[in-house]
Length: 253
Image (cartoon, rainbow, N blue to C red):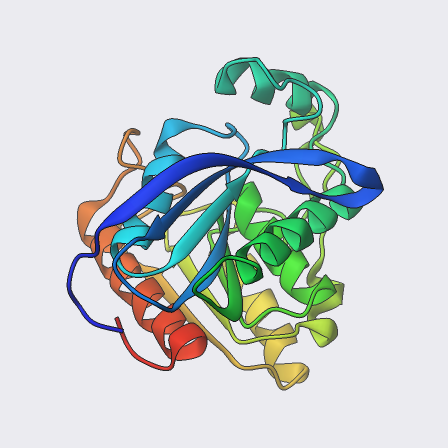
């Protein structure tokens, strides 16, 4: 895969999930190559928003097809991202089984694209990082990236109302190499949480690499938030594209 910036196209698509549900998604893909890998990009708790769609465009410019499933499309198909997120948060978040089914459907859609090379990775930030890890433990995927995934280890605070439970016990079922990117100043996951996950991965003899960035807290990739840390984010993107390039296309990007 070359280092050039690719031409791309983007569109709204619909793909099947469990029980015949049709899930809306934002698909961005390169338009100037004959073969490309796929990435399921799981949005964060604030929802199916512009910032996540811009990440999908970034992947496409690097030669990946990136599909963002709208995990809230059942509860609030016509609501704004903020309103949809509020509705889902009030219900405790997206159920894990349904999430995995939606990621599976998105992966199948990517594998069926003309030009898809058959390999699919998954990435998520915050709650999406936890969901990316869980998906990689429940599904057969080729690579996974956890960007400061909250509650892989540890419980949400009771006042959050979130019905999320630790999934670190799923580590022995991890199906693919894992890249983890974390802020040293984060509290969810804290450095102690990251260490616990790393210990579990070593005990299960899994292929993983973790990077922690000094001076960065939760959400350091978020360009539209005060938490953004440009140096950590730029280093993180380089690591992501290199990791996915090796495991999904056989080349560094």
